[in-house]
Length: 129
Image (cartoon, rainbow, N blue to C red; front, side):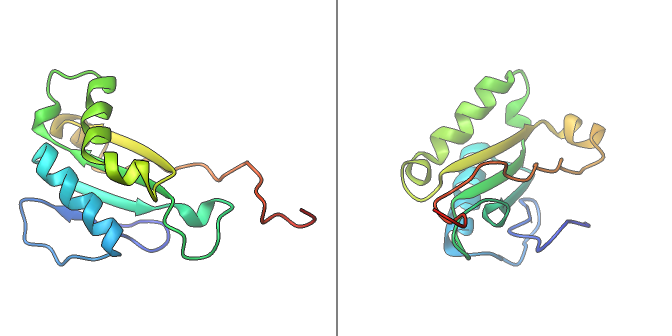
């Protein structure tokens, strides 16, 4: 699978994959797998795209492909994800982009995720602040 930058915590739940990523990325993946029974989980640390210190773990994107999403609308799917990651969202994770798809939707998409835009906001780390 080709990705931009360093691929992080890609996991096909049906396979015994080598666990990669930081402890936070691993915890996110494990909670999502438990909550959704996902066939595919990708956890991407997108903090580098934002105005945060180096090696920050504040901005994530998750791709979750699960048959359990059948019959759920987008809001219901996101609620499942947010409930599973409530502790992380109350703590270190500032932003979470979610792609919650059924297996059929994943196949229609060509088994690939979209790209997140670069951050357009400023921060206290900007020059002159």
